[in-house]
Length: 391
Image (cartoon, rainbow, N blue to C red; front, top):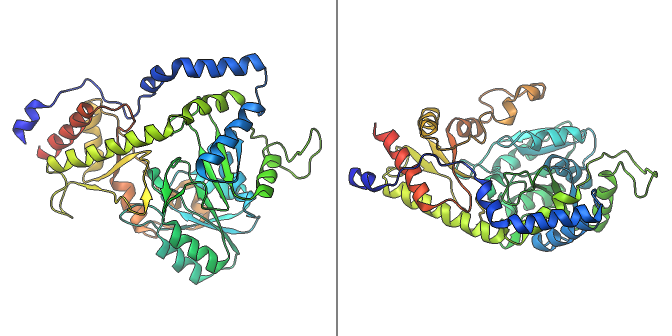
């Protein structure tokens, strides 16, 4: 390993994500699309948003799509579209971004957290089954699986539970555009599904934007009303909604990028494979259980799009500091599971309730991952990890 290290190219910095490289390739297309919106003077909803909705419905295999202002708004719309009502319970994972729970609360419902599968960190269907069998004082209305890091949850098993208990599945597909499970794309498997186009996502806007897909046209029409103050036409409000409309510039940018996202996802998969090979060659994966680095499982039933490339690392925080000193970008998704977040303490969870989620929060580390990342940069990242553990 020492000889290999001498040959590795060093870099001044390796960012976690570098959107400049993407922009350099798309600059003319993107500026042309923005100019088209400016010339139209139609800045909110309109033709660009309608075209994006049609294109993304076709891309995901859903019957319809509804653009909105953010991924968080998309989750709220998706929950209401699926029939979640005040006082209901929604079962979801504790290992996700806060919006997976806050959208449930915004819908008037109560999030019920279950633990994750230790190998994938996606929601564990067995834990969902145990929770459903236990019953409770509130009506469980929906399951909200999160397709974490770009890999779909085990949707076949979750759908069986949803059928048995007469529940709606709402997909949190914020990180999973282009992913699939047993040939069905994220966004086509639930009653509704929510996507985020936050600037860091695989398909990213130049600001905030989100979208909901559904295979039910009536649900789609209701969500269109809800995103526009509950209004089917100007100054006529059938129910209380919200202002969470998508702006046309974001739609135009997303339409440009949508034509590239499958190629970008392919490159992400290639870079994930390179990381796996390099980490193995560096001896970081040997000795299961005793190795300093462990990889998450890639399920053969699905197509992973690697929104993030995440390892589980011994002495994670020390490793992250070591990499930061070399200006190698990393991030922790997520350092505090939802059941232990201070703002959700009223739900009554305690440390130790969901041990796999808590263990993951202490170990996960996201490494640089984007389509333009070079293999030499990856070698430097892996060499730096190996040097840390050899010290």
